Every structure is written in C-alpha cells, then in structure tokens.
Image 1: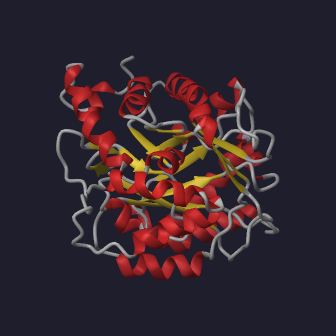
Image 2: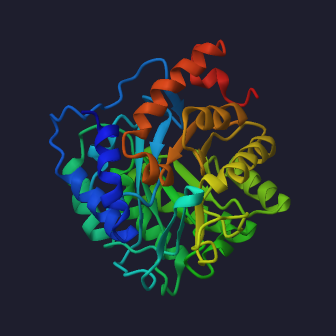
Length: 354
C-alpha cells in the first residue's frame, strides 16, 4: 500500500482532530519514519534539476515554511521526494504564538486560515537539530523571523542570520506574515533595504563572503508601487530569490463556516492571486531575480503554470492537508511529463515562457 492510499484511509480520523493536533500527529509520524522505509524517495538530480542562486535543486518542488517550524523533520520531508524543504519560521527566543484556536481547515474551499503568530521553540532548539543533521546533504532553507515583543526586530533578523547561516542552504527572510502586528511594515522600501543590509553584514561577519544566498518572502497583498520597490531592492542587494507569496489577508468568496476567521488565507483560493504576483514580479525584475512560487499549488498543472509564469521553484503546504504527504513526489513525476510534452529539455528553459 502506497503513502497516498494510507493517507486516504487515515484522513477521516485526522480530520476529526483539531487541525493543530492533526498537524502534530503528521510531524510525529514523519519523525518515526525509518531512513530505509519504502516511502523514502529522496530526489536525485535528473531532468527536473534546476540551479537557483548557485544551488542545484534535484527537482523544483519544495515544502514551504510553516510545516516544519522547529526543524524536526527536514530529512524525512526530503525522503518523501521533495527537491528541498524550508524550516521555520524560527525566532531568536521561544514564543507561544497567538491564542488558540488559531488554525482552521476550510474543507469546502480546500483552504486553510492560520493566525499562528510565529509559534516556535526558538533558535537554540532548532540549532541543535540542524547541527545534528549537518553534512547529510539535501537543500534545507531556514526561514527566520522576529519575536513579537522584540524592541528591535531588525536586530532579531541579524541575530538569526549569525546563528543560522552556517547550517542553511539558503536563508529565507520572512517579513510578510500577517500574524505578527507591524511585521509587514518591514516590506516598505527604506526599512527593507536597511534590514537586508544588516542581514548581509551579519552573514559576512559570520561566514565570510561565502554565506548562503538570501531569499525574501513577500506578501501577495501588495500594491504595484510596492512590487516595483521590492524588485529594485532585490536586484540592488543581489538577493538569491524572492518567495512569492505568503498567505493573504484578502477574502475571496468562501463557502466554509470559518471564512470570517482572522489570519492568513492559504490553499486553493490563493492560487489566482499568487500566480498573478509571480507574473508581476517577473515583469518588475525583468527576470533578473529567481522567483519561488507559493500559494494554491495542488497539482503538477498548478506548478507548471507557476513555472511558465516565471517561477524557477515552487513550494507546497496547505495542499498537503488535503492531498497527503506524497503530493510532492506525485507533482514532480507529472511535472517531468508536462515539461517534455511542451518540448522543454529542462525546467530553466520553461521559466517565464507563458
């Protein structure tokens, strides 16, 4: 019995649980998966391999930040056939996050609303786990954030850079979560430029010129002037990539009884907006900065649309709630067929060709 079949059998029981408890159950199951399990399908370089920011990704399908907040299961996720995974968001100090309930399944909409608030065990706990896996290979990005009650959030990002750069394939800067009050203000042009300067200086101070590339995760709820400003900064500061996008505070028409919950919306209803933002950032950057497409990707066709629109990589999270942990491998397998069907020899040739 394959993983997809097992998930279909277990799904009613999982969905009977509170969403946050269901997520913890998924993490626990991944922690117990032996390295020699028949399910372990670690991606190998092949036709889907793509180079971004000096890193060679065996395939372009990754796990978005938020699934593995505390770096508990990066190797298990890579073992499911994902080309990369991104742990976090991790903050300098542990924090409980927002009051519960704070995570909602919108089953009728194949969506999720969360207002988690950067709940995590802090840098020290994650660091010990990352040290233990050091040298195992595989691309593991580290997504960092600031503590909610920090007196200097920019300093938090510099601190996290110093702590995490030795263990990060890439460092992802999260200034776009809607669940930490005031955080998105760091996307303003002046604040963002200063923030990135501080991060780059901290990286150089810690590991010299050969530090990991810096990716910036942006919100989908941006005005055209914001997009142009972020694009200018990304080019000027030589960012490794832009991750487009985080959850949205907008609300399209939704069917679920949880539709009015506050927080960030992800999943299927985000697809059209996130796809448009890839197009917007592709145009604004002139293709000079690699893009990572996130939001509403639930199939190989969704991933292919994002790639043709300008993304070199894609990430999943909410779709796995509904389709199971084997989704990444299934998307990668079909993505190769779509690539060949449309006459492309590799992913890089297809980026931005819609």
